[in-house]
Image (cartoon, rainbow over all chains, first blue to last red):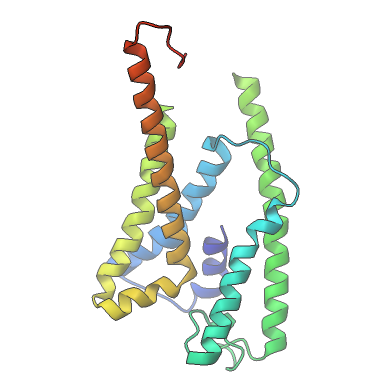
Length: 132
Length: 78
């Protein structure tokens, strides 16, 4: 879900592939994330999710961002423009404060989305049980 | 069960084909290693691995059930 949303809102305007690259792009950024979401909601067996799970789910993207920023500061290579605090928009995010603000806002949004997904999962599990 | 299996395979093929296609498009070893710096490629790889494991575990369970069906004792698989 993080993959699809971030790509769609922050990267798709800068990246316009064609041919096979377009196919790979659609598979990686839209088809697989959407299928994974459907799979998790309707086919995944585990029904009980604890309240802190969305916070745990946010750890990997945060860790990825941290590693990418540190690596970028050492090598100059940033995989995504919004992780680069050293360059102005559109090559970078402009400053360390902008970067921190971006990370806090996006992480908070994804934690909220995580709770919403758990709610949807509970709803779909309940409907499936009623349908049995 | 059958729908779950079909969906799992489709998900596995989608994740893996996206990565392989991207690797094919890069065309050199250095670039191929570099694409694993991207979050998209990492998460698609995780999806492919997790789904492959689920397929393997489920097919093993199904195999165990078939063996139990042939045993003289009552099947435990329902």
